[in-house]
Image 1 (cartoon, rainbow, N blue to C red):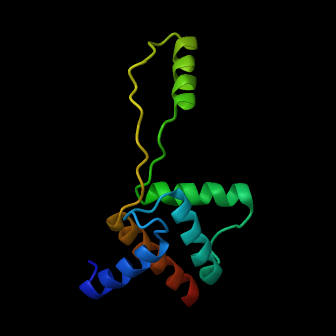
Image 2 (cartoon, helix red, strand yellow):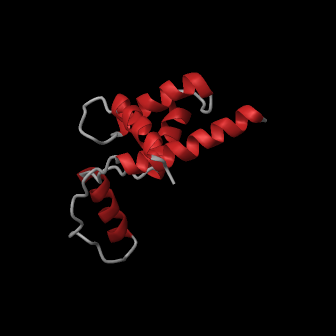
Length: 121
């Protein structure tokens, strides 16, 4: 459980990473946050593709989801048609879901514990 003191500290951290101050961390906010944290804890590879995959995976782990754009949906429908299965043209456009404060708290608490453990080793 997170104490009220920790929650206040995490709220300040969360706000510092929320560049557009919309109360959520989008993928760009998340990438910026990981880059800042990596400067202190050195936990991720900083080459473009590897870092991009890591950022996306951790963002999704904390509750973030990318919207399915029309091109991805069209490709999916094309695959379904080619495979002989029924195409679902009724797929609604999904909205992007950014990381909420609660998702951030859960992820950050776990992340910080892992960093502290590595420091002790």
